[in-house]
Image (tube, rainbow, N blue to C red):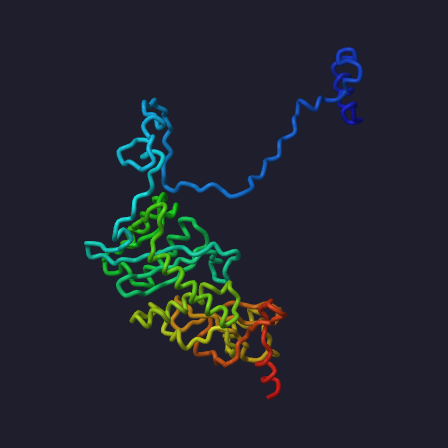
Length: 365
């Protein structure tokens, strides 16, 4: 027994007028069995079991059967009328022609969408997106990309509203149909269905074991455009949303659709290039710029800003050794032919680093 437990028992017995005979010799501590140690939860390792989405669970009720597979199924060739073959040797039916075709009898705009991700790191956009909503409008073959923070109902509702606003869907009261995978949030949450009905959107789901082919094709196509632009400009991959919106704007202009608000030519934006930019005085004071610093700041162009008229997203190196991601007026930037970042190589290994040609040429002059 410990000293503390002995003192507690002695003080208790003294107050109650009891002696050691009532407790027994040496019985001064509380048995450990009265307070069993909590078992540590075991960590589940290995692959997780797939979850059924939107499928209610019904209690299983066993019932007797008189069919015997050994008795009825005694042949080698598959027999459609044999109960044993039906239970033990049946395969999935062949998909009918046109099962993935998105054609509707009513006068509705057909669209398809799917989520790309989850990315290992959050994006540099304002939402910190870890998913991209890749969508396509089938009547004019225009595509769009919008950030989704996580796969909850609020993030998806915001992304769908941005898509409808940018692609001009449902503005004239015309219904539009979006074919989507059986996403749990879209399938179960009533709030999502209610919000989408408010923007004249109807969801058309695919089968649980089958994807939407045109949506998967859009994800692959958009992913190739974004990856090619990121590797060409050597930009940080976390700028994926703004770069994706820029390449989508270039794609849509070729189909006759221009951005809703922005009047900046996306083909004139040189992603990853350096250039001096004249920032407003309020912004400079908020980020630690003094009168000793030059009037123009050296920036790196990221992509187009769809929510402003003449805005583009840029990187600016601040005096406090931090890089700010902000929106600047496109007419205040003088783009150069030099990339801000490049690759260093040792053998087969590459890593992203900064380039020095532009700074050296600037100092030489």
